[in-house]
Length: 325
Ligand code: G3I
Image (tube, rainbow, N blue to C red; front, side, top):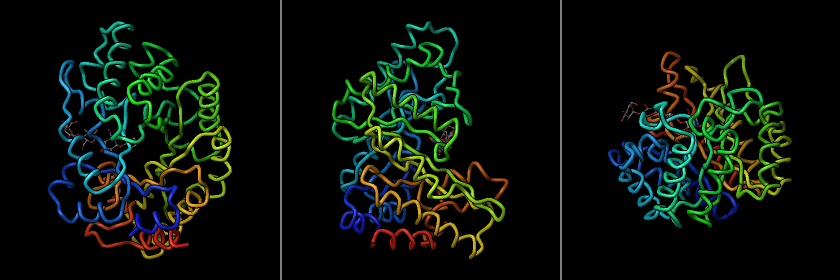
């Protein structure tokens, strides 16, 4: 399996996937495949603020607990997702009447409670998720956290997380960072300045949600390699955190082969560079894929390595091949 091959040949690298509780606890085939193939899980939604902290005085830990327990039983690591994000917030947080001081307190308490609960059990966290606008260098200003603290919310969140679990590895995670350009330059500048100020930041997550169609090829592996190197040179860990390769409605053999080659090239890069701690995908079966929800009009996305009937796609075999070398 992928996890065994990685453990044997490339022990620095966890092979991960996002997971959701509904298939995990309702579908044996899903659970078996997950435990067989992966050494790390990222809860896709259940640790997000809206789910885990739905009311001011109420946390809802049951589903996150169940995923963490499943991971422990199956000797998998857990990557926590996510603490300070603009999205997935409950209405009691986004309502406009909170003072800045109250918002600071809400975020501090939230992080202390969630990270504290999983201290020693969640190895690493996406403390800050998607701090930048979709494209370009600007920080997203729309979140309550930014409104209350400006850019300072990022250091604040990292410090709170570090206090709650000094052993946890703390990440900032974003998309469209794989290309050189204003967004990745801005992430680089942010990381550098946080480190210079002694803020506990340990790594950067490169989501790698990619599109691949007849007319469009995603970023070349060599371009990504050059771009990621400068983050590694700062002394940071890096991870591929949410990879999928959206084929839209096209499931031709040719496209599936291209997809397989692309997954393989990215895994090879992570495999050969010890600063990569994880190669993680945003799900593993097209049966339960966020691309299905988001790309409904376009078909199913076909973005993952097992098809909707759990049959391995060419991408699965190409990942195995890369791990064997
Ligand atoms: O099950 C809930 C239900 O209880 C709730 O009341 C109802 C209304 O919101 O819908 C259901 O929740 C939905 C959830 O997915 C579970 O299906 C949310 O509305 C929906 O917003 C949520 O979408 C998730 C999205 O993030 C937003 O949080 C996707 O599943 C998830 O795959 C996606 O993941 C993101 C990463 O967190 C960050 N990077 C990009 C990535 C893909 O878009």
